[in-house]
Amino acid sequence: MANQTQLLNKAQQLCDQRGVRLTPQRLKVLELIIEHHSSISAYELLDLLKVTEPQAKPPTIYRALDFLLAQGFIHKVESTNSYIACCVLGHADHCSQLLICDECGYVEESHDDDLAKLLRQKSEKYGFKINHHVVESHGICRKCQSSK
Image 1 (cartoon, rainbow, N blue to C red):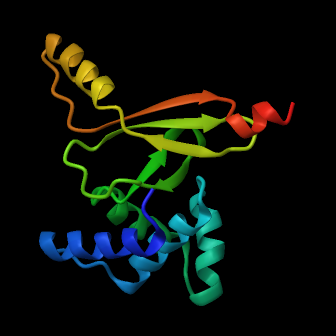
Image 2: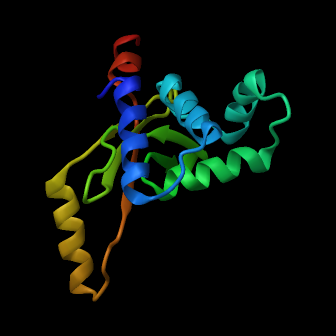
């Protein structure tokens, strides 16, 4: 995974190319998500943002999250209602697989082009065109398995 500075620089570069604004507040929310190294809820983000922006309210976070999701900089982990940073910003075929540990909550993102291709082919048989997908798989991470 790219380091935090590389991800933030790439996000800024993509926003410049796309003609959208990565405001300081949006950048800060992205930075907080990247720093967290695991999934984080909107309210956990709000608490962290309030350290530097005491006036921040839930709509502040949700607007930033909506922007970051739309740009493909983060993923929403639907099953836990939380967010993680995307490990491949600007990936053309933005489809990913999330491996979610049910013990510690750690979320690992992986990209498997073969799986994405299979899902796309299967959906096309039904006349459905996939624009974006996130596959969530729940289980137990290596660290939690070895601690048993």
